[in-house]
Length: 217
Image (tube, rainbow, N blue to C red; front, side):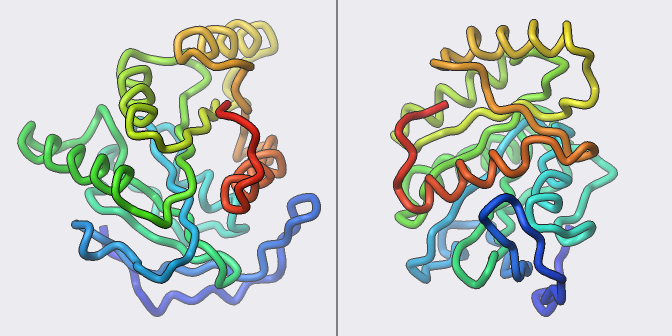
C-alpha cells in the first residue's frame, strides 16, 4: 500500500462536540523505528484485527472518506502510517493483527516492530484497540491487549461495527468484551456508518493527548 506524501487535505471543518478537525493529512509511512516521526508531537495509535474497520474509523474521525486507504485484502498493510491532525498531533494506523496475508516470519517481524514502537516511542500517548462487537473479544484480541498492557502503554478498548448487531446482541457482547478483556466498564462502542460514538472517542483521544484521562477503559 502506498500513499502520496503531498496528499494535503483541503477539507471543511468537521465538528465533534467541542472539538473541530480543521485539517488532516498523510504525513509518512514507517517500516522501522528510524522512520517514526521524531517531532515531539503527540501520537495516538490504532490497532485491531484485520477487517475490524480501523481504516474506515480513522477516516470518519478525520472527516475524510479516502485519506486512509481501505484495503480490499485484509492484512495487506505492513507499515505504520502517520496522519497529522490540525498540525498538532498524529493518529497512527498500525498493521492489522491475526489475519495478515504474509509468511509467519514476516508476521513475527511486523509484531516485533509494533511492540518496539509501543515500548519505545516517547511521543505515543495511548493506543486504541478495536474489537469487532459481533465477536465479543477473540483469543487474539485478549492476547494482544494483554501484551500492550505489559508495556505500560495506556490502551482504550473500543467496540466497532455497532450497526451490525441488535440491542440484545449489543448488551451481551459488550459484557463479553468487558469480561474477557478485564475492563472496569463496558467498552466505548462506535459505528462509522451511523456516526455513532465518534464524539466520545475524540474526547478519549484528546484526554490521552492532554494527559487528563483518569483510567484505562
